[in-house]
Image 1 (spheres, one colour):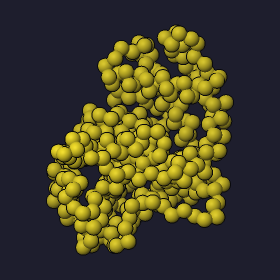
Image 2 (cartoon, helix red, strand yellow):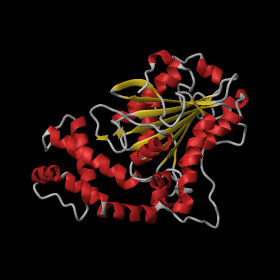
Image 3 (cartoon, helix red, strand yellow):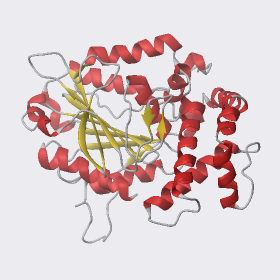
Length: 378
């Protein structure tokens, strides 16, 4: 929760204090600047609300005496097809792939780390069971070790063993959930289409005439697999020192509070571009180049093609999960019926939560506050 508050506070520093882009308080306008939607499972709604506490620290009522939470939209878990499709239509497909991985690559992965699991079993007081529920057990233990470390508590295993356990769990997680392009497609579900829809609508309607009536921030909160899936989809490799590494996937785990930003800029003299930045409580805000894009300022058309080509190669998630509803549910994206103003889109993550922030405003309001000289490429 602390890291979520810090992520919200950093977003406030950039988009309220520096760029004067968001309203400084929830109460300044009749229409909220922020729209939050969360994965309805587990603690994602808490993450959204806690992020709001950092973004709007002055929302404490003097009469109530407690912070006013931001409103968070949630679907029924079985109906959430944009940020939690593996809990609904793709549940059976995911379960089959998990069982296949555990019986094949998963066993080989455990066998190659037998000494690590043996030391872990000694520390836990019983042999580590790699038959009954190896994946769930390892994930819980790795999370516990990360939590103990972040809280300054004594670890149950030596530091090198803790690192090995977290590295094993991270590689196992990527292999189980995102081990192939088709898995990336169906795990992400409707989320890429939702993001592209917002980006392209923004690029097509750049007039700021209705700016005051539009949401300036969209927040979609889900689990860490969703974020890593987006990274694999668009070519965003993470490289954080001190975090578990995966040579196979050329990426690292994300530290608590790490936040990714996708910004759409629409200058009047050129085509719209997507800019990407990363921040965490331990690192400065840094500009990043997507490996699948030709430029650090990725043209929106190229960004769209990257996602479309991937989905065309694997076929859409609906086909992969054999999902053919009689009545197609409309997506809840927080948009309004009026023409959209120019958007700034942001993607962020904290611990096991993914947050997509979609902000929109005229490019001229953003450009005058840009300070690219302080960013360095990863």
